[in-house]
Image (cartoon, rainbow, N blue to C red; front, side, top):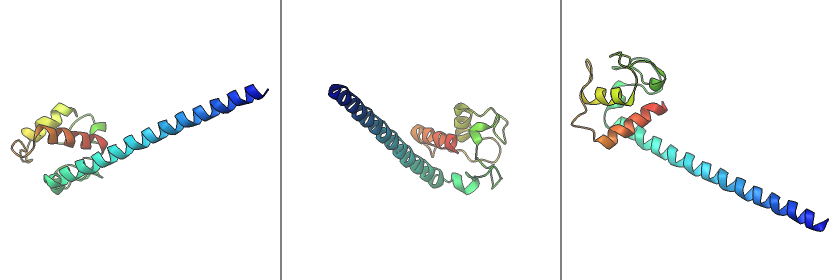
Length: 120
């Protein structure tokens, strides 16, 4: 009987330790993503995107609001499908009144902005 109780206790300790490790890992990933989102939001602001676009609304500022952009079927002004490629094209060779960011954004910055837009 004592051996059985020891086995159950050992199993409970192992399950508890594995659960704790999984929870800590998930928290670390969430913290890293949160820091990444802050950097992406800063990039959005520093590159001038926030001057023309809301991120917390679909309302028009100077340009269309970007909240839920990747939940939409098409881009608000051009009507192009919402894809990473169409966002990249919009930044480099924009439609209508948006300025080009071809000379102001690196490929890595464009990737970060696209990731940020996906999070809105």
